[in-house]
Amino acid sequence: MGERGEGDGGRPLDAYRIAVLRGGDRAAVTVAVVALHGRGLVEAAEPGFLKNTGPLSGRAAHPLEKAVHAALYRPLTLLELTERARVRMCVRTLRSALAAEGLLHRRTYTSTRAGRRLLRALGAAAEPPAHATGPPEERDALRAVALRGDAALLTLVPHLARDARLTGPPVRREALLPDAPDGPGPLTTRMYRELHDRDGEERGGDGRDGDGHGTGGGGGGHDTGGHHACGSGSGCGGGW
Image (tube, rainbow, N blue to C red):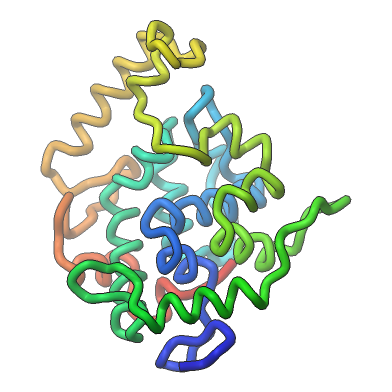
């Protein structure tokens, strides 16, 4: 295995695979959110929620970014976004690639000794994100978020991290209701009911996510379903 961010296959690990290796599904989805936010395509909606701000441009996007953008046609929490069928399939493809390279255990998808050694090497090679006067270079920013999680989010995208609740424990929509003990208040009961009804429809077993595209494997699926939706090999291994 390479010592500077390469798996057994010799391919440098991009920010998405680094995020899965370090922090699992949520970490990878968070990297996609930050990537889209940097291009002005995702922003915080009501406190604790994310939404897209318009169509993807003609610029090529990572398959996970496409799945995240499509799911955010209406506001979702980060936890709900991570549970979307197409998003799950893309992350599953990344996990399978890491397992094939000996960096994750195939059954538990926890990091192997080689995976942990690689993360240590990557962390030692990377400088902590600094307060910059201008926007950081995209690839470096995503790599920092992938490697350092909350610390990088609070430095690089503090407003998004705070407003969309990207840091800390997962937040369910019920906690964001106006009458919730710890809720921020602005989410109306009508909005909650609308989101709840739509969420139930999308989980109803028709194998479709919010953008109207079939997901192949529905909610559970096998790894082959994920490869079909997101592409295999390099299909989910690209960067920005």
